[in-house]
Figure 1: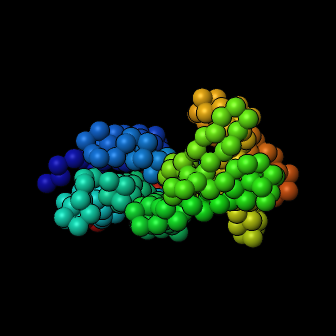
Figure 2 (figure 1 turned 180 degrees about the horizontal axis):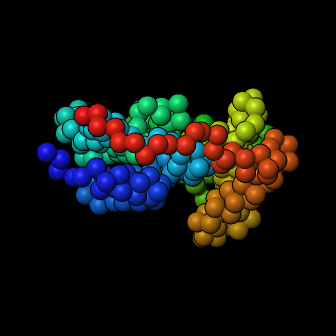
Length: 312
């Protein structure tokens, strides 16, 4: 005896097919609100959802025309989603804390399978690799922070002192006595600035790298150009952060600590916006035309059938 008549199931299936992308975006965005009951901030989890949504949006028509997942694929996706919570409970004794970024990355992958099915892995591989890679990369950064932060901070201090100091631009800027600190003997006052973890910009750089990859990889340009475009974008963002730190040191030299702290709040965002404007101009000028960018969203996949698969 059928619980739901065949006609009704066909209607539900067609409705799901027509609204799948909207449901996917809503589910991805809504799932990030799990941060309200976790140790993670909202943006930390939302970034994973954003990464997956950007990739789907870049080739929206392709994803819309993928065959609908079978019952088995839906069950598989649901199990992956449930597995994210099981993994969290199983690893709390090892890693401590609560539901975090690794757990949520598993949930995001489960949602991808839930809406698009594992049989479409030839299309899903990119969001899965990028979401999983982001999780591994951020975990690696946590290890670096816990074990090698002083070395990283001192490297940034030495770069600033070598470029802006007596051996470079000639300003009285020297590494401080404390780890991760450089001292500026300014015109109005002498002050010391500390390079903390946020000042290194490494976490933001990693997250930016994956978003950039999500934007560039679906484009119909050669693979060497994809890697070159990605490398230039990431390297440029890294050098912009070095420039920011040097500019703060020079502001400290010419002005004072109070002015430096005020500028510090907005300088990074301002320089990054300028770099992004220049970067995308260069990218479309030398690597890809705007027509190629538009074509990357055009589907080349076959349409899907309304037939119901009763595979359990």
